[in-house]
Amino acid sequence: MNETIESRINRLHGDGLVDMHFDLPLDLYEKRNHPGALVSHYLPEFEAGDIGTIGAALYVEDRYLPEMGLRVALDQVARLYAEVESTDRFAICKTKEEIARARKEKKIALIITMEGVEPLGDDLNLLRVFYQLGLRMVGLTHARRNPAGAGGIFSANGSPRDGLTAFGRDIVQECERLGIVIDLAHINPKGFEEIVDLTKKPLIVSHTNARKFYDIERNISDEQIKMIGQRGGVVGANAILVSPNPNDSTIDRYVDHIEHIIGLIGIDAVGIGFDFCEYLFEQLPESVRKELAAKLTTPHFIPDLTNHSHARNLTRKLIERGFSDADIEKILRGNWMRIFDEML
Ligand SMILES: [Zn+2]
Image (cartoon, rainbow, N blue to C red; front, side, top):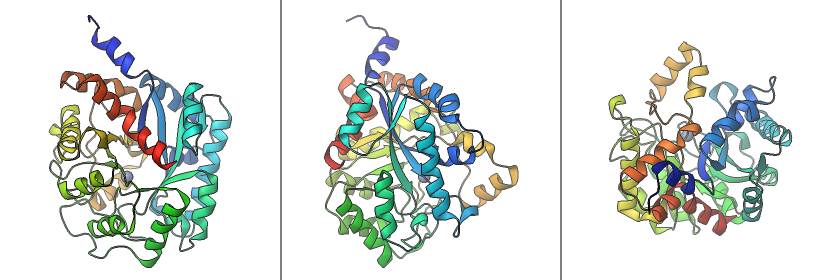
């Protein structure tokens, strides 16, 4: 076979990539007075990277909490629906059949996810409301504490030692009952362990990295990776926390994380959760960026993997590193699709 690398990438991208974490609704909400960003700004990047399915995360920034949490999250949902209605290139999908139909029609499938349950306040009933609106994946916390539990911090230790609250446990059980995938991204180590104990269905981590290469509680340990593997889950590799060192924040190091996860739990258990947010970070005023760096960390973006139009660079690297077509297909798409087939 005499195929060029570029045509091999085209073939591998043919069915579209899956990225299970992107803060799209947040930005559409911030641009609510300038509608059309989904098509004018995002669509060209998605198309350049052959992105087929995206986990669109509802996330409420600190400045809106607590009073405005519910309202901002609902407005994010509204903006997402309004933007999708303005074009025939996207579909908000609630089931595996809807994902399959969207892909067949060459639309980009959007799956609504939630990063931190602050919008629910302490009202479990609201989870059902969001489910009706299309919510299909929930991570209980971001880095901060909330009524459900506490997040892992951006340092090797020191996050709250306690696990979930009673409300957090109720949410976990209601998610399993309703058919919402539970996302273990960000939750602190004790909360992680408790969710594993409380649940039976596959568990996923939409966007994280291995502590082996970047030892912070926000990433996951080898033990935690193995717990996901035992439950038939998938870990999405995150493109912004691959190394504490900016010089090591490269696509090669990103692939090191993928290889490490595969080494621990196999080729069927790793996917993509890019978490591209350089554009959001750059929009922030200098003072807020400093505040975030002090509270969380300064993210080290991978220069040639900072937005979806760069996805081909990852596939090229996977080819260079010797991955087979079948394995690349699983990483880019197949493993997340298996989770949707089993769970949605
Ligand atoms: Zn996150």
